[in-house]
Amino acid sequence: MKEQYKGHVLRVTTEKDNGAYPWKPICRILDGASREFMKQLDWPLGYGTSVQAEKVGLMISKKWIAAGKP
Image (cartoon, rainbow, N blue to C red; front, side, top):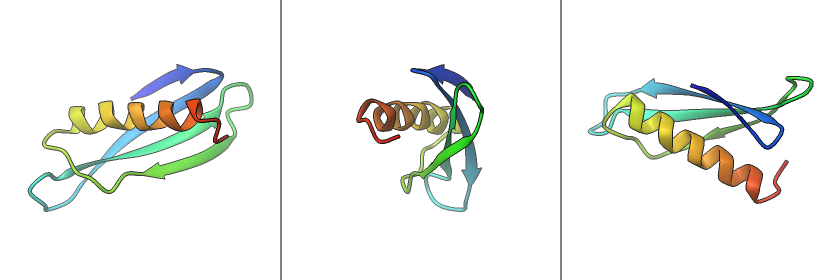
């Protein structure tokens, strides 16, 4: 999943493991103008579906940007 947010490009992919909630989001934040990689956020909690994990990944990425972390 890819989305633009406040001058950044958010790319969220999912990774599957063998747990009860197997899908984990992997969030990559890029600069919107240069597309330069800025940050990768790995979230330790898993979710039941890849769609749920992607939605959470977007929320995590947006909160990181809104908090002024870049």
